[in-house]
Image (cartoon, rainbow, N blue to C red; front, side, top):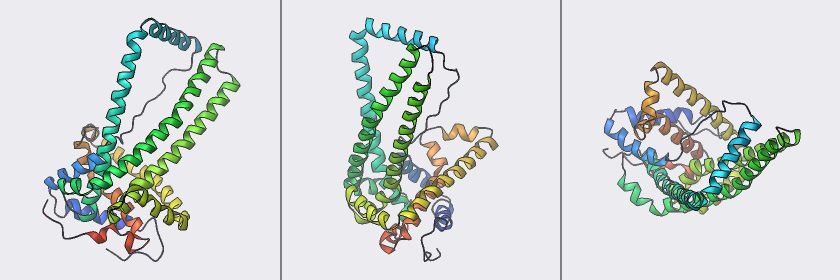
Length: 310
């Protein structure tokens, strides 16, 4: 690997990250190693899927009001079993979310262990980073609940605004302006929570990995780095958006070239992660090489020992 540049660069980590992918996954190619590292990556990526959707019908106040009245009447007539069922479903969803959050928090250290040390191991990082994984889990849980508390009133305002327009006979200028304001607030909140999640995954986890510290300790060290290098990290986020677009275009091209066969395989849990492993190793390596430019004490690869057999 060539020496780190004198100044922090967002393009420098590309070449060593690609080289890391080659060394880990193709030099030599070992299918067993792919499946072991892929399992760690799958745990790390749990809950990161994206759900897309679209609106196929135009806004029609009469139809919406009729449907809403039917739903309200149904709930009012069957509240004695609808409300307990709704509460039960909500609790199940919450429990599943917490479980996924805990597993993915542990998995992020497992995957980082594999990438930083070029090792295909599951039990070693699972047992080694119990303290760090649980600390990350509690931090993410608090941030997630804070996002839920912030989102709930925005959803309530959206519903109230839409119902007001429906009862008024259709969209109004004031109602549309209110919805636009709510959408802007949701976008602003989403950006803030995305930045927090990105900084946590890309850098705080790496600092915790190197220091054997807890999440708040990692955040404290990262904030000191951010305050002294704000411009570099802003450029990092902009470049991450650009890289995300390029990676998305590459994946779409592969899906189209294979007549959607690759897309069907990628949709299968775990197997899809194994197929996307070069991309996941690249993105994880990129953030580690970027962080290492701030000094030897931020170089996670310096902990690497000769790779053990997969």
